[in-house]
Image 1 (cartoon, rainbow, N blue to C red):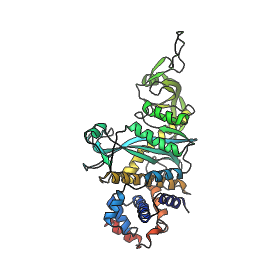
Image 2 (spheres, rainbow, N blue to C red; image 1 turned 90 degrees about the vertical axis):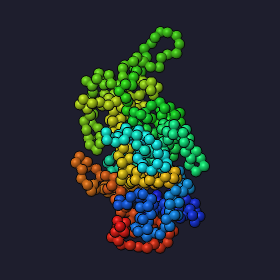
Image 3 (cartoon, rainbow, N blue to C red; image 1 turned 135 degrees about the vertical axis):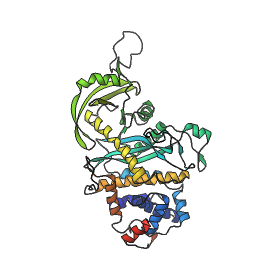
Image 4 (cartoon, rainbow, N blue to C red; image 1 turned 120 degrees about the horizontal axis):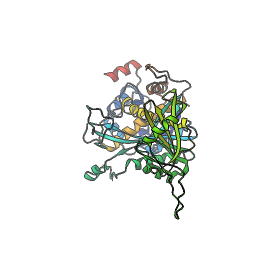
Length: 442
């Protein structure tokens, strides 16, 4: 049994053993593979067409749309099984988690989770507050076939407090309560940390998430086995680690003398920077950097700050894990960009941003299906005996792309003409590959 078959059969055991449960399990399996097919969009209508013309399964339209909007899909159980199937999830004896949020622009006014969110990446000719969903996401940063990849692990829909107060949102019989992005992030990291109970955690995030609001609850929950790696803002005040004795009675000072902010210290430390050879963005690069142990009031603990210099630019990276070397700090934070690439893979290549379903359960199920499919593709790629070849050459990029791993995933699925995916559906109509493609394109 291949790793793909083992994962699929394990996921199917999360569904009830009765007739309806097994039918949902079969439709779930085929929906995952329909989303993975490169020439099919992940819209619900296209998934239904794929089941009909590619897999040869007749599914009544009304029943399939009820399945896609069902509140009974066991996502929590399936995600925990997926997390355990990730081969060698640690990097340097620690689980490296990337944290960030992204927006999904929508056109329907009744789509669940939509508000006017600020888009910091909007161009001059684009709306800065598009009607969209804001999704807080956690991904696993992992080296696969000598390239970094981000495997989606969990996601939450963020709602604005003012919009919830003005117009309460309900999912079934429950009202949606407000949670900040930091609270949602802590909740997801806690669930992941509970499954990987014996692993150290390193949360890699940008300067927006890297503050005491995230650090304190994580430290209270996990203790010394959880650390933070983030980027510092240029106006953050930095203090020395050893306070000068004052000779006065009372509690000793926790922070030393004020050294300055990250921007002013970058100008001072540039002349003291040392060269380091770091694997960054797929290439071995020579980087000038300077590190120092300091105290930060924003995190209220001792941290290591690494100033990285590039011509006239600089960036300050901060970590609470004092055992990380300068090279590891730079490489791991450079790998954080893969969560941004993962958002593109999820939204554009898999197609989660194209759907316009409105029901809360349908919206959540569709997003979870797309994320789970993406993670399955990366797990399968990691288990391949060969490295997928890059089909479309791009200057400066030597490693394979997500689409190449996706193609290998589909090839493995269709190797036995889909017969192993779900034998419970019985005999299905079979079509030649050409006729299937022509029917899909019609």
